[in-house]
Image (tube, rainbow, N blue to C red; front, side, top):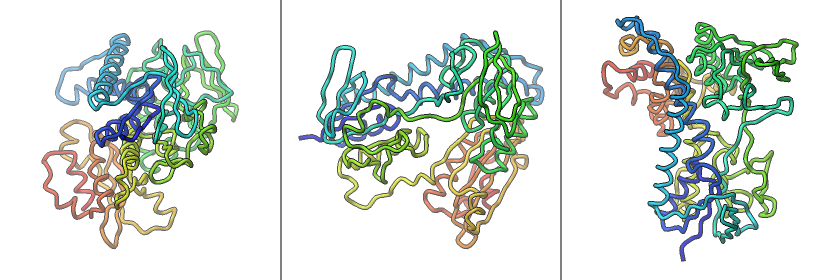
Length: 452
């Protein structure tokens, strides 16, 4: 008899776990109430990157004269952008659904909850389905956090999911939250021509990132006319006609046409039946071990719900690891998922990406490191492309030369970081990068230069 594997949530973790477990012979059922492919992915990540891509093209047209072209002017067509985003979401949703069906995965569209340790109930439009499970994966994702001092109306006061794009394009957007999501929104709406003010609760944007990386982004924001309100924590938002007023704890106020909340997310764990199944939670998250097992060994959690890195790439890998463990493949030696070696990117302009040990983190723990840095201004391809902003920084062990981490600020950083990520994961040395025969001219040459 095949292992009965029930997955609640068809996002990156759920889809990867479902398709991989099905190929290994499991009887897999996925219960999804919204979009197959993940609400956080298809309602957050994909639309934001589509908008950023549109803004990027607009930025390129503004630099046309520096590339030997006559001046170009591209204006935003909000309806066309909205249609494009919907088309992308529909395409990806159909693609993922087709993938599940091709692997023999049963897909139930409805709300899934745990009725007990081995029972899942799916509430659908055509009734209730009760499912018996040998193993369960909870991958229900998260939703934007809305503080109690703010009332979201979906018109002038928005969460991130109401801004892809918003019902009306802002003339002056006030972004609250200077983490990854916040700075991406600053970039995209400034690219569209809106005035933007960023409320920064600390003294630098991206407080969890390398200060040098954050400073590079701040400089670019200021050059583009973004207003930074540092050391200000928002405590209230008032509607005044067609305007909003954001109040801060130090008495400062910012007036704009729209306000956007980008202050984190909360896990979708309410109503899942976790207590009934005996699953321990912590602040709404489901703590997991290295196999993504919860306090109930046959009930797993992955993706945002697990409280680990909220990245689609991490969720997908967790899903694969869960499928392997469910099917008994981890009885032999294998590589556990190392969250500290996960690459991440911020799709601003210029892009930002990092992986592994950061310079500031190494100094904080007293670890000896070697740091080498090369600006893109010294790279032929960057100069040819007319965008030499940013740098490549590589962190390595001075004794062994093993690559420990790296940061990239510049065009294509989200792609280039893959080389450093591979080096970190495989324990490669800086010499391995230096001695690689790379394309010339290419942005990747900056990686070899920094490694040298």
